[in-house]
Image (tube, rainbow, N blue to C red):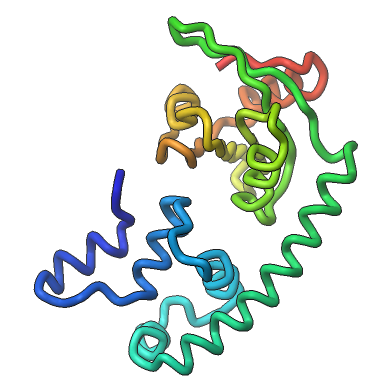
Length: 201
């Protein structure tokens, strides 16, 4: 997939108009490409606001350069706070497991994974593992929803993680994918990762 939903929608409804820069930033984050230096800062600020569905907000951010610049500045502050939070998480080795993922595909691949429970900083925390730790191929995080399902999130810049998400009934992009799994099945995966230090997908 080479385009995010927001850009596809813009091109459909405004085929002869230039794509707003903010839309490209959102796409850049969604595809996890980071072609723009402010992408992470903008994404963090967008996650922190309540009026994300207000069209007046989007019109303002896409129209007035000064407002967008101020928005980015605040985002950089949030990014620094997030980096500090992630570093503290990684130093707490009791919060995650380093284990193996055995692929069920014909190639029988074996991958080193970082496996942990979190509802915060899912993308950035994953990147901090697979980008900064040379021996980590895939980051897998999980959390339990109020409906009793477990959401698994797969991230990597080395392996097509959509393959593993699809085997659990989910899907996604090559470097970013996920799946909602019923609790009993998910608990077996979690147990194997944290105790046997090996999961099979």
